[in-house]
Image 1 (tube, protein in one colour):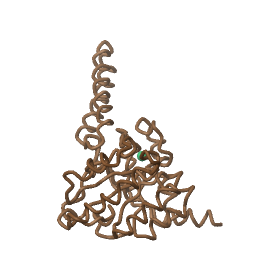
Image 2 (cartoon, helix red, strand yellow):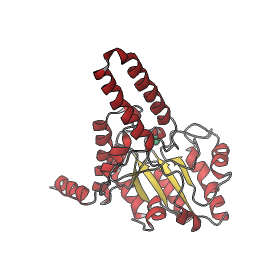
Image 3 (cartoon, protein in one colour):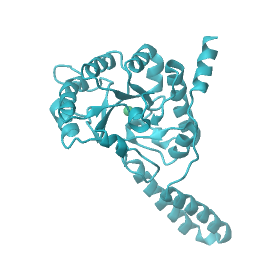
Image 4 (cartoon, protein in one colour):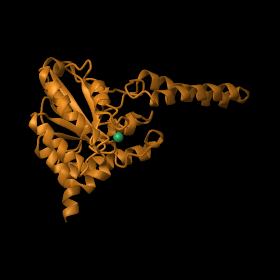
Amino acid sequence: MLVEREADTAVASANQGYPWKPTPAVRLSMLLHAAAVATVAMQPALWPWALGAVAANNLLLTAAVFWPRGRVLGANLVRLPAAAAERKEVSLTFDDGPDPEVTPRVLDLLDRHQAKASFFCIGEKAAAYPHIVREIVRRGHSIENHSHRHSNAFAFYGLFRLKRELESAQAVVAGITGRAPRFFRAPMGLRSPLLDPVLAQCGLRYVSWTRRGLDVMHRDPERVLQRLASGLAAGDILLLHDNGYSRTRDGTPVVLAVLPELLDRIQAKGLRLVTLVAASYGTSS
Ligand SMILES: [Zn+2]
């Protein structure tokens, strides 16, 4: 009964899809594939040329996968909309949670600065820690979609598996909070050339970042802080992680060592930290 009710909630709060419009590069790539097939059908002897053209095209598409802030494969929010920047808004985003040790401490630090943030949760972790997900929302932050299992191979999944990854995480979050995420960020920022139509079906918008702290790579909080704070301006989307994988020498999660000073600097510049939903839709939920 409970499961049925959760499923109903998930369906009721699912996003409306939108029509998929391929980017010029993707459209050209689809045309090239069709032309290659037609060429081989009519002139079989030309198969090496057709194969070469398709291989070159796929190489370019693969290069685009490793360009997280690029727009070749689809729309990509790398900064907040102009209206949000005019309101002096900045969005802090946290990937890879929720984590039972780190996330509650991140929430306390944000509260101290009356800051709101967006948490790109992994579906499986959200399902494991629903009370933390509820607490994130209760304190006025938003939950967004960071795939269900966060696989290293995500960027190379086919359409079916991509859809399953996005929809599973949508359903978990909607089942816990009553609201499906509106934004998606790919694991490690590596975006499949096939992702865009799936985002459209799920009614999700793709987000990368303006600057990222690389806090999962660096153990030195000062370095992470510099990457995020130097040149910081209204409209920026900042990326940190609340998974606790990276620790300072004394064992403190790097994100917790960076946040107090980062929040102070943002406040000192007169910038307001808001969720991606508030910045993009002018509403908190
Ligand atoms: Zn991640």
